[in-house]
Image 1 (cartoon, rainbow, N blue to C red):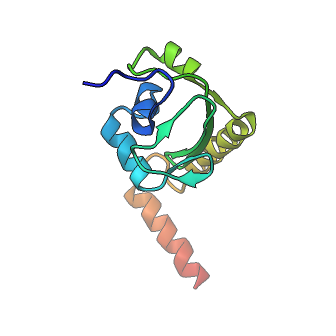
Image 2 (image 1 turned 180 degrees about the horizontal axis):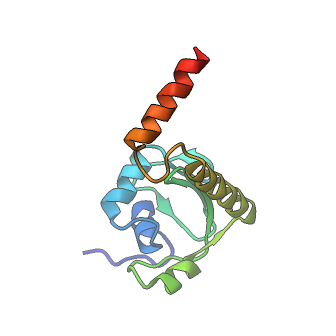
Amino acid sequence: MKPESQTSMRLDKWLWAARFFKTRALAQRHIELGRVQVNGSKVKNSKIIVAGDEIDLTLNSLPYKIKVLALNHQRRPASEARALYAEDSATIAKREAQKALDQASRISAAYPDGRPTKRDRRQLDKIKRSDW
């Protein structure tokens, strides 16, 4: 059995250890789908990363631009996992703006409380018929 190197590790394992994914299998799936890039290029699961690499990640349709600061071969608590990377402030702002936009679109949805009642549906039909 080979000893684990402290200067490099697999990308999928790092994403799991940094708590971006709940399982390594999910991390591998995102990498295979091309949602993860290292230093601007598409990579495979077995890509070896080192401290200083930049990772572009799309998670739940939200962008992440991460700089690897440290490596950890074990999954540790979230507070320790946040010390493994630094996020780009512009990407954080873009992600927050997109979250706010998504939330606003959900609020302005036609029926945020569910399906319309029978009375609401009849009123809608009356409005639609008057427009035709």
